[in-house]
Length: 392
Image (cartoon, rainbow, N blue to C red):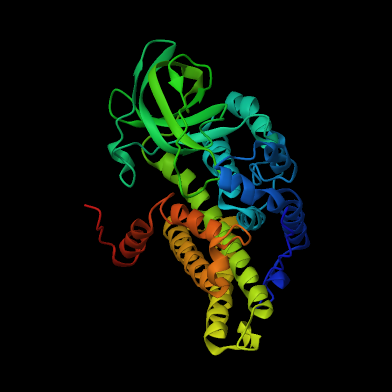
């Protein structure tokens, strides 16, 4: 098993901006990742298998719904703490962070924000511990960046509705107990509902053959005349506002998570550069290697400050969707660039499972696309600064 020697970079002394509680939360998750994730993750990624035994631990360290109030079973933490948890989990692996991110922002958040009191009491405490696992159904085979074009629909049948359609690229779907699903009613209005495993006509085929997020379970959601009780519908939220607000929370978590992947690549490259001898000296003594490392720590530091400020704005309910888009786009691109540069510093060893670089690089190729593609987030920023939409 691999030994985790990770040391987190903090070039601008960001720790001085964190509260004692925030640092305790981060350090707790960091220690858990070192003990439980790092020693096994390469093996699971190679086998393209999700380590389900980690679910209980994720619940215990507060990774499921960190900001959900304690009255509903959550830890009741602030948004910076949530971000730090995502950072540490993705430092271990993007797939593990994805599992927690989906559970938190795309399942627990909409139930808390849009659900009835009965729905909150029924689902949230069990989701917080991992006793129940959830997934989020928005993306369809023909509608990714344009979710408003979705074809999934339901019809009113009195005390229940009948749901038909399909969703794809759904993290957690192969093992999820519930799915938060968005579909159009008979008037073409998008509504949200909770679909439970075991409902007749509801299946979750797994997606195989991935080169990315191999330690994460991905699948489809297929609805063939599924009878969903009306009490499982979110009562008031209508239109894209509901699912997009969930995505904003998830994108915020990703903006922190990507830093974790970048930090891991940088830390590995820095250590390797001091150990690898060529031409009679460590390669870290050569100018081009130092250029790579200096640029890495600079970009990581800029991203750390960006997300910390965004977390403060989130705590104050002042963070805008466009600000979140900027952070998600910038930080994932930054992490992917660092992974590629770190791979070069590692030379041929960088493509092996002895180091985490190639796994992070492949994972980030998914992260840069999901929850809004790199280009879509660029256009969101463009729209925000010009007031002119490029989407229509």
